[in-house]
Amino acid sequence: MGRRIHFVVDPQGWCCMGLIIFVWLYNTIFIPKVILFPHYEEGHISAVAILCYYFCSLFCIASLLRASVADPGKLPENPKIPITEREYWELCNKCNMMRPKRSHHCSRCGHCVRRMDHHCPWINNCVGEDNHWLFLQLCFYTQILSSYTLILDFCHYYYFLPLKKENWDVFVFRHELALLRISAFMGLIILGGISGLFYTQLMGIFTDTTSIEKMSNCCEDISRPRKPWQQTFSEVFGTRWKILWFIPFRQRQPLRVPYHFANHV
Image (cartoon, helix red, strand yellow):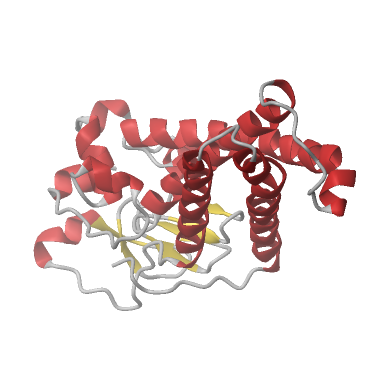
């Protein structure tokens, strides 16, 4: 589960994802060139600051690419339903296929997805049971990278010592202010949007409710067995080792949970 490549043919999604990759490339190229390397050469910052920036940038793009091509939990055409679990399955009225409860049919992708949260155009993919953990990592590392970029933009003008610009690249020297203003503008927009999204995602995991279930009001608190937050997060990330929740370079192994918890809707 979660190891198949899932590719969605959607021009709108390609444009949205291309915009995200452009912003990532812009900051990954110009922030080190304009701020990090010049200040490091003049002894204003240590190499650790550069390594941390590239570390955050690598984890951000890795989680983006993996979330966009990972199988979100697409159901097979003829699923094998164990006899003991048939009461937890239902018929989809759009594709006429049996699916587990809490699954949803994505009209943009054209199939049902297990525990679908929403379809995200920014990754050109559904966010479902098998790639939700990658989407959370993407939100987390995007916040870290955007915040780090904004801090560097601020410190470059108001905290770090002035640079000796004799050895600077001509283009960077002439357009330094414009480059950093563009970087700060994109950082503020992305940080504001992704922070709100990340908060709603965390609240959904704490309450064990997907975005679709919130909008359809199909989850009543009265009928829901309560689970500790460690259990809900472990189910999303596929492991109880909390350090692994932050690593995108691994395979998710779904945890086996009782069906009266997994299908409480």
